[in-house]
Length: 351
Image (tube, rainbow, N blue to C red; front, top):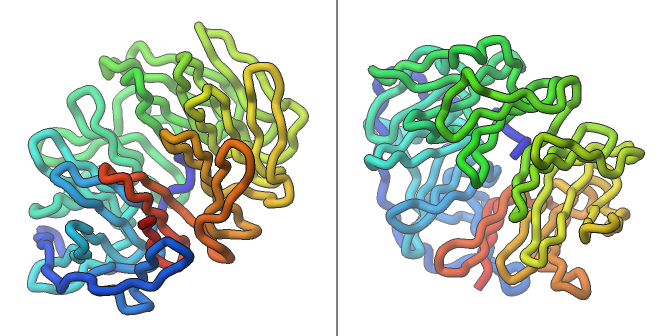
């Protein structure tokens, strides 16, 4: 969740088009994984600094990079271009597909409507991500000058600060599986907005603590890792601290199918909790920059020290993609293919 943000197309009313390109006939191989990169000549890939990989509702994938947006479908990468065929080169941080088919793009210069125009108001000139459909409206986090504010899309495609949340210095936000929206405040815990979207009945949790992300597990427990002092477990309004003596920041929390809780740290590797005790793994990796879990029970990581992509198969750690470049994002597509986005070296796809 955390780990957001950071161009040139600035004309108001820019119309975005999908540019056709030739099929990708070949790709470099890294072990059994295919490697796609702009540097190596992959046609249609906007850039090699991958920010996100998202499934498209009508098939294929959306790929956001620091130098534009691409669409992947049926073996073809298609760059999103601006009006007149000019390359769309903004840094793309998020993409949201709305129920009616509209697509919004969060960039380092505001919000664009795919096939529409640049949107105004509180998002103008701001880095916008994430974009979340919540309470029958579009919510977003707009950052400018290092300060984040929670904004909402109003009629006329204008954006405004969310009433009641104007004073919150927001760092990130997440839509949880129960439909609630959780907003991480800078050094001041988290705010819970119920699924109804009623800001007036929000709840403020963990005031005064620096939370890094929010995760809800299969037992309805809320996990909030901290910038120091471990992580907090919340259930029925009660919070319990875990790993309180841990000095490294806890960054991300995930749950594997067997119910174990996994936590990635900024300096002491990976921690796993079986419900009774915590066990430290991969301490030699230092900072774990990516943590993911797939339905087959595998736990996937990338570290700043060694890069690449490794996975835990239940008995040992295996290497899927060798380093040294770290992997930034990870997705299992509907067809079962695993996709990994590199920090500087493009995309990888399993066979």
